[in-house]
Length: 127
Image 1 (cartoon, rainbow, N blue to C red):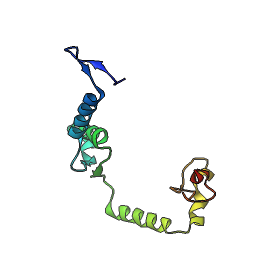
Image 2: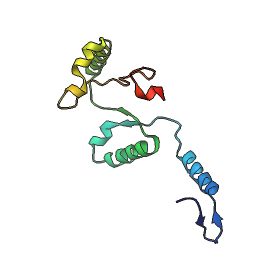
Image 3: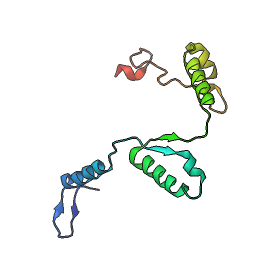
Image 4: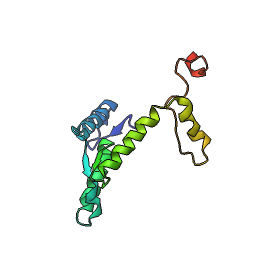
């Protein structure tokens, strides 16, 4: 527990002191740009260690990243994006035909919020 600890010189360290240290550490870890990693670097034994180090840093410090150099052709990427836009433009009834809960593999469509927050059918909304 962080409530009280003894420092090296036997003084009590308060929660505020510890919170201040943690806050300064978090600020030091803050990022100013989104990391962009080149996946092609993961394919070479010479560049893979540096790539993995960058990947670890991005995931542990920032939490997300952009990937470039995937080897995916732009035409395929564009077609996949077009299909995604077309799918999400379908009526809900069509999308729900492949809802995850109806698939044994648990793969498929899932609504972000299946029950409206302010719905009378939502028991949590009455509290």
